[in-house]
Image 1 (cartoon, rainbow, N blue to C red):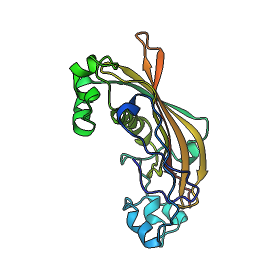
Image 2 (cartoon, rainbow, N blue to C red):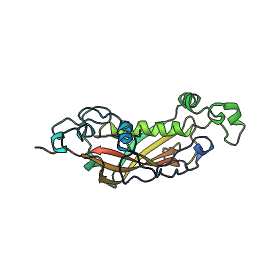
Image 3 (cartoon, rainbow, N blue to C red):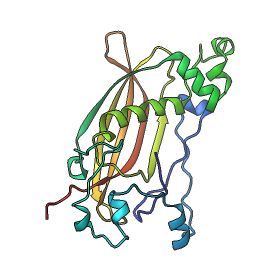
Image 4 (cartoon, one colour):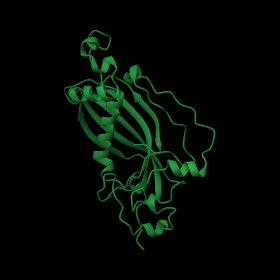
Amino acid sequence: MATPETDPERPGPAAPQSGPGSSGVAAPTIPEQTHAATPEQTHTAAPAPLEGSPTATAGAGVTPQDSATLPVWSGTGGPAELFFEDLHPGRTFDLGVVPVDGDEMVAFARRFDPQWYHVDAERAAASHHGGLIASGFYTVSLFMRAYVDHVLSRAAADASPGLEELRWLAPVRAGDRLAVRLDVAGSRPSTARPGLGTVSLTGTMFRLDPDDQPEREVLRTRFRGWFALRPTSG
């Protein structure tokens, strides 16, 4: 989801934590490193871009104008129909309703976050949790899949420079139904990557009640993504 940030306007990153914080404690902020990476370090850390992407053409003897003739792919490899210019502040995307599968929830925890309140049903039931709760990273993975399915599969998405906030605001349990939403909070052309724009996004997940009405916000995240500018005709 994230790549090393090269945008000089980057705010300080936040590092989410699992455990008790996965039921509603905000992740602590880690101070930004004060030393600057050398050009060699920056080049080494950058991921190899896909052929034909704006990132691939930049710095390779191809101007942003020349790259307009190359195909632009969505985040999942199909034709792109949403570009930076379409992701204007105030736009909202309904990312659907995600059911929480209990077996998948526990399997994820056993693999990645095997704390007892995620995997030990008997002990969790006897605790103040009142039963198993999902790993916060499982919940944000459900958000990520909805984001890919409903936006990135259509958008001329590049990578993401990172997130500023990730909060687990209430426990998520097997059988919950989570309504997912994405809001565009801001946008600007990237100063670091020609042909791309930086979009600030807010994602939320709400647990629904039996009448399909929002009952409780369970997740909130703020992050940024890079998206290609709409190609211009020659």
